[in-house]
Length: 335
Image 1 (cartoon, rainbow, N blue to C red):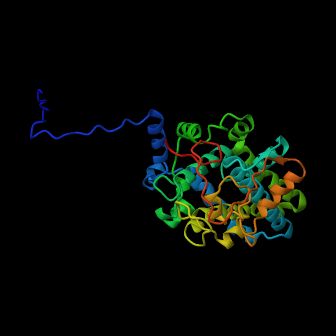
Image 2: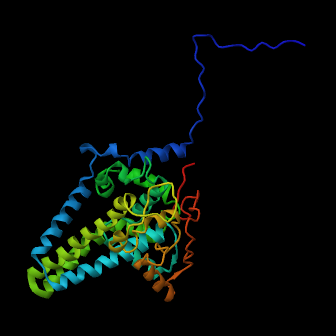
Image 3: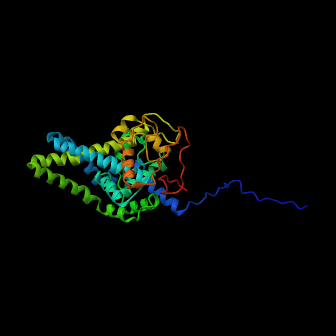
């Protein structure tokens, strides 16, 4: 039998192992994710519009205490519930990001308008960012992990500038199921008009009620103080509930349930429950875990405006959801 001689590489030549080539789609997705890394927060890359807006809102919230009126405080509380619970928790989060239910057109318009008036960004931007958070939770690429620093997760991550072109690519990867929907495109194009316009409306109502003092009172409480409270309620979900609390489920991240965040954020503080089972509409999975937003969902279902509601609360220590299909319930797995 003839022998076979295998040719050996020269001693001074190293053997190079070929690396699998990444797909164009994956490379593009990784470039988008890299825009959310903490090292991108530089003075040359600050989104000054957002920074100045946030500063102005918080300064206005402090100034509100010099223009107190019971009408303005009540307006603040009502709008806080409408924009934070109905708009963000129900609309942007459980409805858009995770598809926990379906809404008929009147209810959809109302809850998305409430979300827009929260001042937390357009529906597509919010949902895409949240889906990225679930994909990379507490790992490199998570937009707001507290393990990059508490202040980073609470606030600083918002100040990194991203161009319109980057945002469009971001939508293509993380909200492909909704980026072309007419109602969402409408709010995407008119977001700023609604937010700024609401300030003029509040100022005008206040002026009609009692002159300049009431005008400033309604503006500062109904817009500035209310938005500052809404912002920080949401930010505590990003920061505090990944640091402190207890866990009902073993997830791959550090999400936890924190009772006081559940109070100020209308049920969103039961964060470990949510990360384990994001497509489930109720965030409270135990009898004592009160979720006021869930009551609003049940009310919409009772009047026929919400349907196909996923209310199947899993058993304790049930296996967390894994969904590799982008847009199905808001978990997007890199392929």
